[in-house]
Image (cartoon, rainbow, N blue to C red):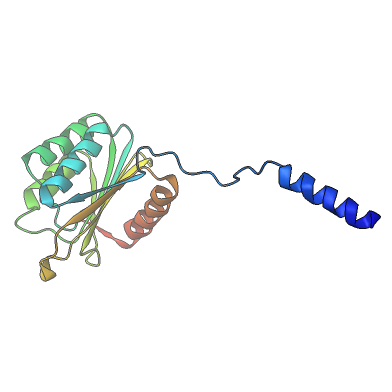
Length: 169
């Protein structure tokens, strides 16, 4: 009987004990990833990253054709002494002028035939654009923009491995 009273007292104390939620809900804020659709949004994102670069731009650009505004941003980044490494699929009549201009202004350009269907631009090892597009399937171009440090570091390492495989233009 005494034991039963003791257990009842403890049960009563437990029932009065305040329970606090231990899980925390994420506070809504700016997402760590943005997605862009289509060529124009992709080119605008490239333009913004190039204009913001201070040290280094690493780019995988299979076609490397761009627009007038992206060509201008390329020149301005090189004039600011931003180190620029660009991997293209190959030199074509469509990109030849831009490739030559980039090299003449100090960019390092290499070619690697295995880089079709994706593009990459890493700014100062802190921010990146990853584009996916297979024009053979008439896919919409999708571009992911992020400042995620783990993803940026991983894709920077992948870029440097591709750079070693690529041959100079």
